[in-house]
Length: 209
Ligand code: PRP
Image (cartoon, rainbow, N blue to C red; front, side):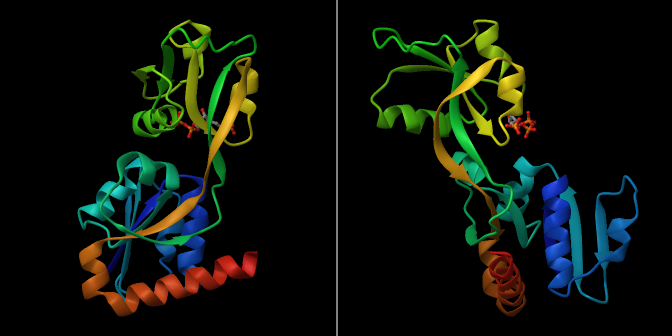
């Protein structure tokens, strides 16, 4: 039995479609229900929908053999998993953004609001810039507006959220995309099946290029 952690949402639906094409269909997953776990015994596969930022936890601890999550999560939490494939989907950037009139005064510690504490710390360390990190869990965009922070470090996809909150990109510094991750022990003990899945996913990615 292969256990697959899918990120809930549109990306997860696309990922499921790829697994289906790879021969691991599970028709019950398409029934519109609130269920979170779906199994196809015949095909030897079980899927579960989890919060995108939790996929790596399930995979690292072995509850899932394989999963898909954003490169942002891998860089932020550095889970002990194998990263086997870039799906070239869910593309976005990690960026610094601020109010339109923002001016970076180097004499002052920069106040940075973010969900991605480690990514932000690394980025500013590489610039030798002193920062004060303010860890938030969502709605990051309002931090500069309420003068909680000078800038934010967050994901930008279409740029709509920034625009609608009168913020703009200062610098896009990290391209992000969805990655396939595999539990280390599973890779050892279910090598054949995992490699088969990976191969098919890779072929699908290449066909879409
Ligand atoms: C992310 C990010 C931004 C938004 C950017 O949030 O934190 O708020 O997407 O997308 P855009 O550039 O296309 O507007 P997400 O929707 O993942 O929700 P979250 O607040 O739970 O992280």
